Length: 432
Ligand SMILES: NC(=O)C1=CN([C@@H]2O[C@H](COP(=O)(O)OP(=O)(O)OC[C@H]3O[C@@H](n4cnc5c(N)ncnc54)[C@H](OP(=O)(O)O)[C@@H]3O)[C@@H](O)[C@H]2O)C=CC1
Ligand SMILES: N[C@@H](CC=O)C(=O)O
Image (tube, rainbow, N blue to C red; front, side, top):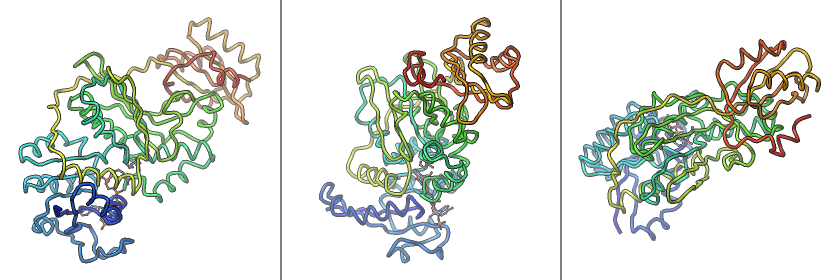
């Protein structure tokens, strides 16, 4: 049996989960790895705060130096944000400790230099919990898909927003209420702006992109839109047309070592798409590789236990497995986001839309040469039109408003992801 001394940074949702998991699964871990983990100290901001976890008071400290002085073998970082987490991790690596972190912001922004520092010092830095919560996606890429060239992935990478979208769609509750629930369950970031504006998913996309395409992905260059402007009614409208709206993270490489496209934003997925069925706090990553073809990994993307699971697995791995520093990261060439795919457009109008008006709109669209998949009158007490176009140009809304002569009060456009066909039965059925 090997005793491993662990320093834990942070005792919030994730840190408490790690503490509890090491206690509850101590025997399983010992039996399978011959490792006995002992928490030597826990760094917090406020020692006086009331804690739900039993037996931790003597371990708490507010001084990082005190943890390092205890000659820990591994540092687990679960405080979040760039500073002081970055300084603590650098100091731990320089002191010869392995480091495990859940911090996507830090790894997205400084992962390349921290990986290099770990390699230089002959220790490991693992961050499975930083992407997809409990889903072992980074480990799968590092260890189980080594021989594949992954050319594309699409993913749901934020538990908070997927939870909010699911609750708004299925229960009709407001955005604010759904967000408050996600916060109460421990899914959201300390500042939930990062979740709802898509940044958290962009950090995870940058990390996934780096591992998948072996290039350094500057997070500032990832195109990113959040879900703030989506309301229950829009979600239900999309559903009535055969779609779910999801905050989608997509990465694609055009040719080996070719340019990349990386984007995060809300998109409509047809019910038949594998990611359309991912609900609540679940995340999913759909990978496309040249040999494996396609693989979808699904699991809880946030919360105490799934995230703790990912950190504890990393902890076991840094002690059991040889270092895998992967490939060096080259420079990425990022393409501007392609806005030219299928698009869902809804125009809310002051007057109600009759079937005669729908036919008239179809004809106008045909005459001006727009490739249309569907046009339908809005229902459920709203006035307006839902239009699905096969190709999109940002100038279309202005053209449409001018040509259709409708008194439009509200316009929303969203990309449609996956196959769109006018013969889709759900779509056909929705046309009233
Ligand atoms: N929540 C989740 O589902 C997931 C979170 N993550 C990531 O895990 C990390 C932690 O998240 P989470 O547990 O939710 O965060 P919390 O806000 O719940 O907990 C943060 C903890 O860190 C401590 N802390 C914060 N700043 C400092 C500081 N400057 N010095 C010392 N201690 C500090 C806090 O101390 P105190 O208790 O005294 O305030 C608290 O114990 C983040 O990087 C997050 O992005 C990753 C995957 C999922
Ligand atoms: N706030 C994040 C937590 C996990 O990474 C999320 O909701 O996904």
